[in-house]
Length: 233
Ligand code: SAH
Image (cartoon, rainbow, N blue to C red; front, side, top):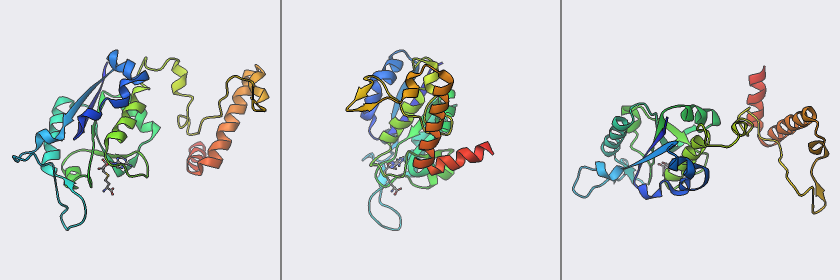
């Protein structure tokens, strides 16, 4: 089954963008996923094709108009009735690998990209839309955020990644960060690869990796570490 991605944007030329290359690009050619862009401006109703207007109450910037957004969202919903609709917004729920996995297991995803100051609030009241953030940063538009979500979903689709295990043994999949990786040369600027990795003792290697994962998570991401320990209790 093809994973159907639909992007609502004022800049359809930004897609597939980097997803034209490498793993995602090959998967697109092989029709493991499909891409449709919807130009939000096509749903403007006035003769100037306005999509934005000044904020009620005053202030800087422009706000995307609710009637235009809703018409574009309704159109996307008719095209892909089963796909969840995500809106990219800094105040949304931070995206997680768990949510990415759920999305990639589903029929596809519809992503609404903001610009300017963002969306008229009423679109979230009048339509079923999941607000998602890609981190505590502010982008100039939702398009790079949509590319992040798509990239993360596509690599998990069946047959996209080489070895099946490379999907599950990764940062966040077990609630931990990944252990450090090494490859040849054995010695570089006086630094060697940890001896245990050359021992051939698979149990010992697995134990070392687990320990490193836990150490790194505890030191670098106390938030993940607390959750990991909470889950084990
Ligand atoms: N005024 C908004 C920021 C608007 S940035 C605020 O203060 O919250 C313009 C658009 O970029 C947003 O509508 C959103 O679609 C996108 N965007 C910016 N930062 C983002 C983030 N961290 N995650 C997801 N989308 C983001």
